Length: 79
Figure 1 (cartoon, one colour):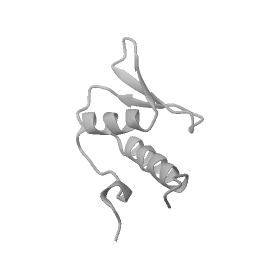
Figure 2: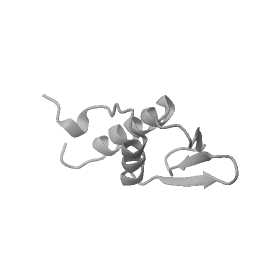
Figure 3: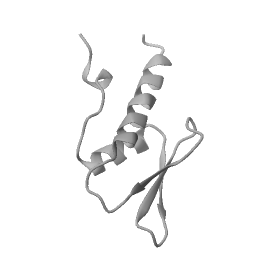
C-alpha cells in the first residue's frame, strides 16, 4: 500500500501547491507589472510562468511537483 507522501498531489488550492514547490527546493519569483509568477527549480531547464491572479494552480505546476516528488523518492536511501 502506498503512503500519503507517495500519492500524487491533486489540489485546487494555490497556496498549498506553492508550499509544496518551496519544500521541494523550488523558487517563486513575481514578474513585475504582469501579475504572473515564475516557478524555478534546478531540475528543470525552463521556468514555468503562470497567472498569479488565479486562485487555482495550473495543471503544469502540479505535474512538475509530482515529477519532483517521484525524483526525490527515487533518490531516497530508505527505498
